[in-house]
Length: 249
Image 1 (cartoon, rainbow, N blue to C red):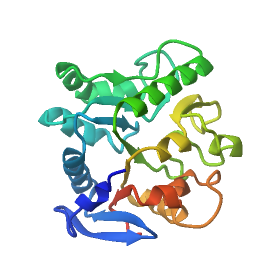
Image 2: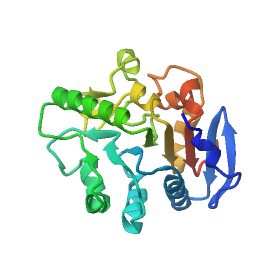
Image 3: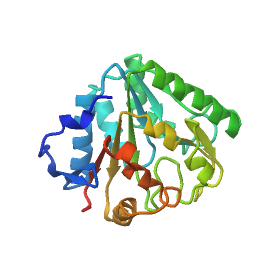
């Protein structure tokens, strides 16, 4: 596995410094705007046609996808999803629709870059099994795999919720279904901890003072199932994680 973190300069433009926090490379930025700009530059440096790029949903990475679509410079082998809100294909609140709305899907189609979506109008369990197979194919096909992640206020990452069952923490599957995610969209499909541990690089975007507590929990001791973001601070994963944040850690 190549050490992609070696490409980081000591003071990337738009950041105050590169800090090592318990083994994780932390890029402290002044705002979410500068954080997105920094993430974009890192993606351009590292991602190429040999890369499978996995995208998270949510509001945090949306401006990043808009910039990637607008600039039209992204070179990548394939794009897939980290997680999804279950429902019909491109339903109103799906992450795939959000990516389509940013213009990134149109850009990918214009360059014949496949987007491996999750939703195919099947049952929750069948959808999870099918996506597990897709992810296995991608990880075998492409020599590089990179995921863009966020952290929720409760410490969840992807759709691996806070308080997730230990059996799902230890699952060797690459994609699983979640039936009890807190909030309005309880049924989800998500990459597992096992899948994320196989990525060559995890780029984690955390912006806003409301995420400060989640970051503190991430770096605290305790079970991963209680606070899934603690997974990023495990020995196998921390050395291939870039945390970009406007919060002090």
